[in-house]
Length: 189
Image (cartoon, rainbow, N blue to C red; front, side):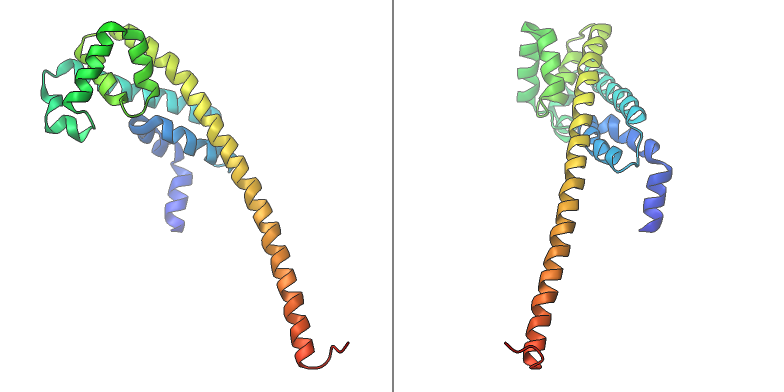
């Protein structure tokens, strides 16, 4: 266990980067918690989150752009892309491209399908990246702050639980001592 912790502390940013590519929003919240614990620098983490999320988004876009209908099969199901989700995403993209892309970034359930659909519909890549980057900058900052807030709250709760546990132990010891002394008849009324 000590070896795992030392590896995590030594290679923290190298570990966070691939995780940010796969699941940036979740890593932002977890990273915020690690910032509060003093393990990670928030600025470095933020940069890693943004770059990782953009690489992930671009990968999904490229997969959608290079594919024909493979996403409606077994490969698509592996990534959570069903034929129904892809059809709905394409339909919405045709009507509201920018709004659909922003929603794909924000709404977790349709995100991957929306990014695939953007590539499949051959939306201009620079518009895609610009929109994704704008959303990622804001989203990563908010989620990092949420992680920091909850990490701080966790530490506060831990401190209060420590006080509560200490008080409870002292009260239990005093009560126990009282009954022992009473049993030994050293404490009479």
